[in-house]
Image (cartoon, rainbow, N blue to C red; front, top):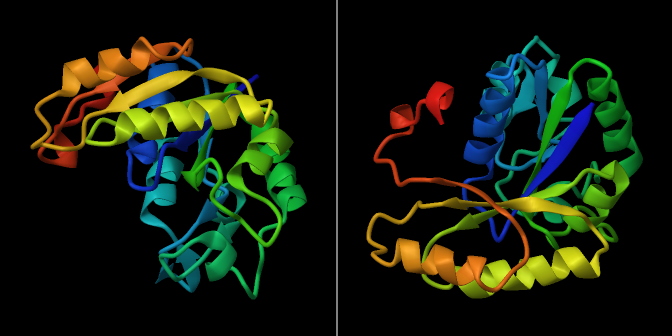
Length: 215
């Protein structure tokens, strides 16, 4: 089975959009697909359980039902960095890996969405990069196309190399309606990295405008 790890140049860059789009892409190829968001901050109490809206969307997109606690073992109330939000219940990479292996057995493809950027701390010692290493899944980098993104993208590509992680490519997400230099910015990143540009998600006014069946 295949597994991919989705990380971003920052938080709120469109990682969940990319995760859902990739899940639909593989489902369109008649493959069974599941998603995973191991760590989520900013959760709400639903039926007595802390749950995250992004993780719920990933759960819904899966080819089969999987219990929420399996795909999101660390769900924190506060919308802050996991190493701060999880002081009383810190992230353990071995726990995530066990859940990862469980999901691997259920589908042809598993898409794992990280939290924040590559060096975002998960606990007092581990980062998202350490999690990606533990899962041994190729990285797909999400780049929000906006002012400053070239620097952030190139720094993250260097961090991926420095961490000895494999990069499957990157996806450009156009999430700034007022940014009028989209094409040239994407081209600038393409010309400065060997990583493959997998695709581009255009700017959308509403989430409902994005048709996962046709993208």
